[in-house]
Length: 248
Image (cartoon, rainbow, N blue to C red):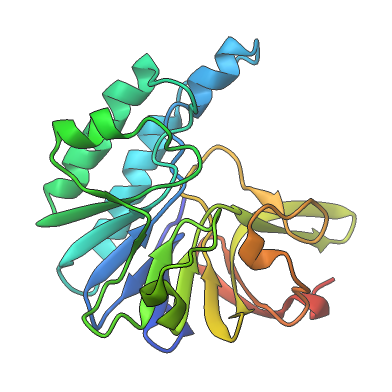
């Protein structure tokens, strides 16, 4: 768990706040890939894990909220609030509503961006009167677009955005120290189709994610050479590690 969260500049106008992203001009906090219900899905597969996901997720979100430099105008959940594809599990019903209530208690507006795991999210959103969108623009200029990252949209407004923030990939990177190698969540910052691209790590606390140097890439935005992407590792704080190609 992060011992201290301080904003770290990713690109102009967007800062890392732990595994979340802060857009100070619009006072918008972006988080994503909570995958509530992941433990229950593992248990049904016969993989027994201790039930700690909700406790760890709630503690991390509270720490991020307390670390915000200003009171947010909106909190955007950038996809995959819940884990199960075809139904809403008991764990998902109970814990997604608690998370939405926590966030709603700190801000007037919560936005749900639909992710690939959010096939049955509408009943939960209706209970808290929260809108679900495919993508979201935090400012009137619509130069920043927040979308989950599993689809490339043909919408003209999406096409005109200059910066795109995605989740979906759960980027992480393995860092070697002597014979020991450890996996860390990370931000990837680069370009896609002439636009600035920020790929966010997951909030999901019990796994680190996809090792972007060794595993198959899922997001169409990242199916490109990544060697020039800047890496920001999320550890006890956020560290800028330089270009992906320079990391050992």
